[in-house]
Amino acid sequence: MNTTSKKLEGKVAIITGAARGQGADEARRFVAEGARVVLTDLLPSGADLAAELGSAAIFIQHDVANEAQWRSVVDTALEKFGRIDILVNNAGIFTPAMLEDTTAESFDRHYRVNQYGPFLGMKAVLAPMKAAGGGSIVNISSVAGMRGFPGMIAYAGSKWALRGMTKCVAREVAPFKIRVNSIHPGLVDTPMLNDHDPEALKQFEAAVPLGRMATTADIVEIVVYLAGDLSSNMTGAELVTDGGLGL
Image: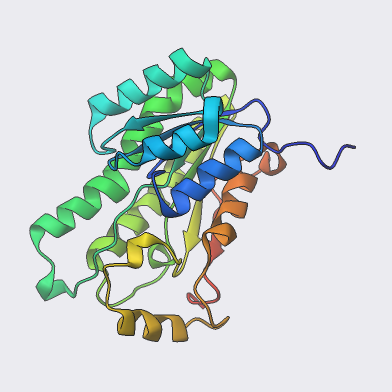
């Protein structure tokens, strides 16, 4: 067996939230593993990353909570690359607040990006994945979707919902050889944390049994595994990578 073969050779992936941080590193690794990738993000800087990755990548500016834009993303992916094998619902927001300080607008925004966006994405790729004879959907949830954390009602609520949607859809689409799994990171060192109180983040990190926040590389390894054929018998699974935070 050739152990140096690329893990995603010939596959076509859509990765949301791919302009920076974890999504950008997923896109880089997918291309290195032989995939062609459609990067989407609200941030236009995703175009720079697509240019860096060359002919194996394209960028589409995309609001994941917009159904019409999802149809455009799927149509463009099929026109450019001919098929869709993988969807990584990576886009997400995190704005912590206690219940009494959580505005209706913030709660709705968490719902629209973290839950409604993946719903639209899974629905949009279903037909092309059926046509391709199968596929893999990877939903980036959170350890906050596994247990309760104070100050995270909007974020955790959306991630619990994504966890539940993953299991429902996994059962529905299994007959079509489409697999749906979720990943549950803890604290990850990405730009999403830049706007938060450094002292609070230090305290949160100190609570991690392994003593550090995750790197994007920690998460990307699991995304590649779930996206590829090595996990071909896994669906509806919840892979926790939180340094023990949820114990």
